[in-house]
Length: 251
Image (tube, rainbow, N blue to C red; front, side):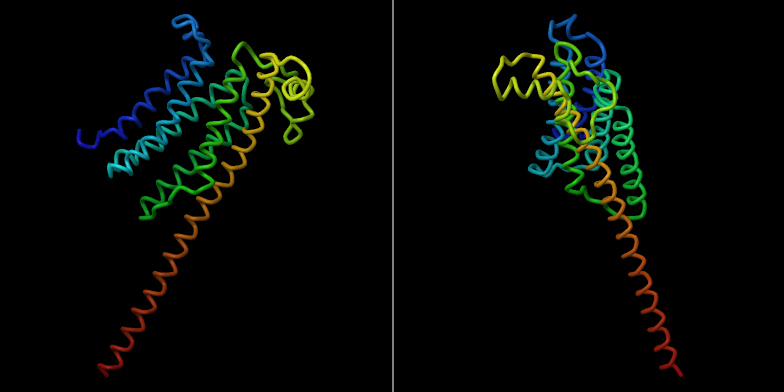
């Protein structure tokens, strides 16, 4: 198959990793087969798949191997990977469902908008905020997965509502910070609390950037439609004026 080059093969590998990632995160598969904690293997699979997102684009541009198949598969692979990881986090009570609904819903909305734009002959380029959101959610997901290595994070409100802004008010976080940066012995529990709290904080960053980037996409589409409509009106006026002048010359 001519279009199945190295970048496209990397994109396909990202799609094939998705079901394996779900199995690892939701079952003790790796612990029974390889003796590796499932969250360690899960974060390794997730980060490896996320790295292919950068790698396939870089190789495609460098080798001039950008294809229609790659343009189609790349966003699908990204959305499958992120959605599967986030839903697995909800199942493990590591992320709130409402935040995941917003993030995944944004992906569907932007994909639908791009499909409509394509039928209208528009190309909506990826925004900077959209790229930032992608890497922010990779970091947030990785931190949350790692926080469960060795068991659920020992936070009092684990799996429940989390402070929106004042993360430092969480008692377990203050104790962990004192151990890590002050006097005291740092334990695995302290690192779990730090990773979990930082991951939940990053999840707020992802939610906000998802909303902002969605706004940018819709604003760009609206601007493109408005500009084309204005151009068509100007063209129609010019045509009418030309026809009017031609009529006067005939007379």
